[in-house]
Image 1 (spheres, rainbow, N blue to C red):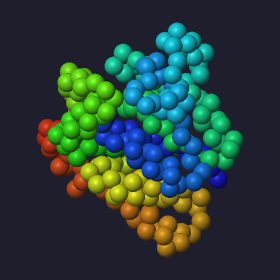
Image 2: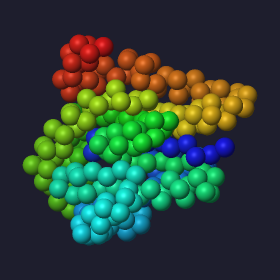
Image 3: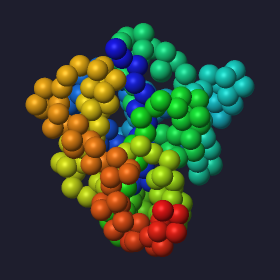
Image 4: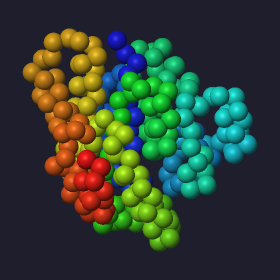
Length: 236
């Protein structure tokens, strides 16, 4: 059995791309959907690797023709996932991983409620700011206004964590990668229904700790650092 749809979302600068790249090197039969965007490539990005770059006119034509599983406008640019990605992955007997933002994830969950959703959090705003600044420098420009805007947006995105099945705090990369791998293996084991071996059972226990309902201990310090803990307590 194949065809599980995994959604991973995170505020910009949370290290999501690094996690996804490492996961893809560790797990087989997992296709990665390369999103479409109207923004220009950054730094060493290459067409067809990070994104499929296209014009605004062509993107809007694809919207009109219903070619997107999800799409959103973020910071003045369009981003979207083509329906073809899921069709092709399932035809090849593989699962599909979508790296999409909160807006896009909500669209996909509405269309595909059995999708497995994972939200990646930075440990605190200071670390997030450091990562955003380092990435900006690596791309050849340091734009403090853009960094401030992304920090503000991150706080709003973090408030959407309740919409996700799993929560990962990306403070220690090795542990975060192992946890992400565990989620994929655990979901496959549950859906395939085969008795787990000892390693799969270990992965399932690790994944269970990352379920939103079980992640309070990891989640609360992050919410507190972003000034969201009181809101979390009120809604709990």
